[in-house]
Image 1 (cartoon, rainbow, N blue to C red):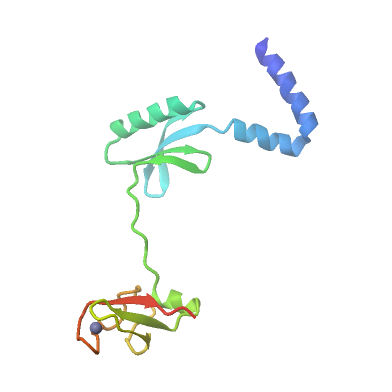
Image 2 (cartoon, rainbow, N blue to C red):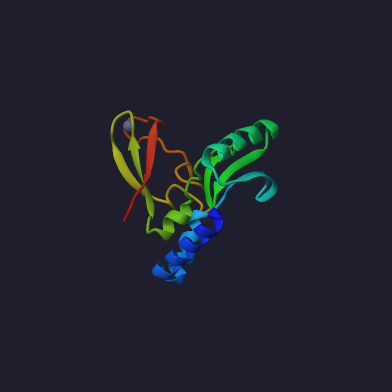
Length: 156
Ligand SMILES: [Zn+2]
């Protein structure tokens, strides 16, 4: 009885919002929380499909215990709310990528004496595939001969 009453209310709302907008609202409202176990980039196992946040978190925590060492996620649609996947360290840009942004060289800054200067990627023999800032030859300060030289892209 209650269910059919809800249906009627929902239908009235759909008429008011217009069919497309209403469908969108209903979909996002009914999007379920899923606890999934991953194998590489594929879902290996769906362990829970829940429509209640607290229950979903409890299910996620239970799944983590049951599938130790596996990547377990709690998702709401495309959004990952929780995950056992270790955070990946940020990938440094390559010299080639910096070149596409207009960078042609590197600013070198001596931490010991404070001298700074600019060298081209060619001058330090940095290959396009090499990650910045470790690409090319090691730098030594021309003034104090320190090896403690920091590098920054020389932005155009
Ligand atoms: Zn120096």
